[in-house]
Length: 116
Image (cartoon, rainbow, N blue to C red; front, side, top):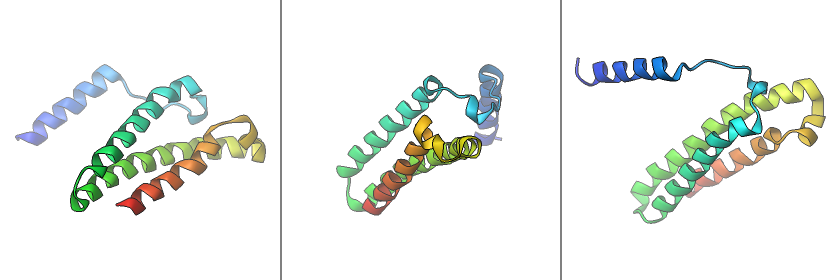
């Protein structure tokens, strides 16, 4: 009843204060995406910079965390991009930025993983 109990209480508080809810993936605007994209970009950049200063054995773990952030973003972008592509066909690549970023993010994630 130590760590698990405290973690459970924190998760309950987060749910009560934050009131997380699932929205429609296509309803998010670019401004809705901006905080998450900024946080991920800063996080990945900092992790890569830290990894460059660490011994190889430790850098692998840090680069793995950076790649994990990118692959999490890829998952979110996949859901949104598929929705746009199903609705608008290939024209989604002209009208929306998410399918383009979906192409770039896994490439960068793979580069980060290969650097580990």
